[in-house]
Image 1 (cartoon, rainbow, N blue to C red):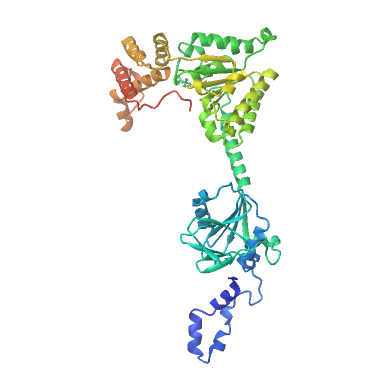
Image 2 (image 1 turned 90 degrees about the horizontal axis):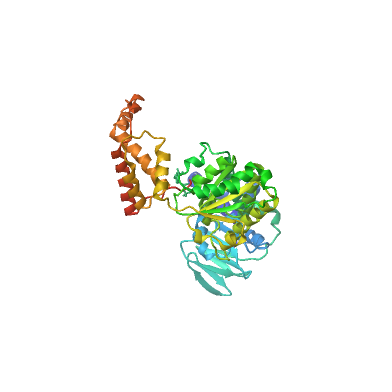
Length: 496
Ligand code: ADP
């Protein structure tokens, strides 16, 4: 059916109250009745110009569609409907039907069609229509008719007719007149690809700026003294990084290793020692989390990695710490283009650092050594691998003293029995820190300090004689062991 909106408009002017009034006051006949009254002249009849958009809508839908079909590309989509928002939602629900990515969308608003339709070009080059209605529509092709259920798609050819709610739309490959110049007046075009690219760029920039903010030296510097145990690792890191930075002339003819891997269970102090290292080496510290990166640096993240290394070089000496490194450098299927790209990118950047002799050191940390991409291991770019195992009893004691040292601990506390028990239960440094903090909280509850805070009667004197007791500590340790047994404890020690 040729949709002829002008006729529809015209008729609609003679319906309603006034018509009835006229019939009542002037019963002479239909001729006078049809004479348009001043109040109801459609603007175009008076010769006043309609907006170009309004005029464009008067062009038959089949011609408007045809003018887009004339330049229809594989990754294009056309949505036609009364309410385009609704139409887009329906298209989204039908997205399983569309087998290829959509890069550009054209939206044609049309009130007369009585339904919603989506058009795409399939990989064979045919135009395909998708029924975006909750009811069946009919496709009439070569005198045969086919019912199309909601969300079903059929390819369409020139002269096929789509019957939507009793209204017919003929498929034409070419419009009667060249409408290309007016297209923007009847079809809103949307470049998805460009939009997605801009969004990705925005997200990546945001992520990068938050990461770069972390570049400054750690706010409360940690020293090697505050790292319990790991004496061999401290020693190795001194020789690998701290001395070369402190005494560069002594290392003039030495090829430095710039990539390190620390592996071991979570909470054993890998991040902690890396921070201490940056402080001891008087270097900048950039801490990144592989899991965060994977989710935030969507799409093409190569540019971000490049920029990150540039920042590191510009601020050298710098330690880049990549926690949960296996998330970005996980052994991947070779089909995973994104993963492979990232691994290759990191390796290229590491090669540049090696070749240019920059004072940038990259430390990857993982709880899952075996999951690391073999390309990372094979490349030799991460040349030194150090294990950070669960702490032994002696180390646990040191860690306890480091963390308890800052707390008001009762001098009668006997930590040995407690630590032996925790050691048997494979507690880590992060666990010890957690237990001491919990003991502090238990002490506040016992001493009624929280209650005073709640009642607004707390004053600094209340804390003056406060001490963490054996009871507070035992209670915290018991609760930790109970949680560990029931296995519902959130692992501690992840860098957030
Ligand atoms: P990982 O990186 O191995 O998962 P973290 O370094 O994040 O572990 O450990 C979490 C916290 O536990 C650290 O911030 C630190 O306070 C404490 N911790 C862990 N191991 C030690 C240690 N050997 N000495 C002192 N504190 C430690």
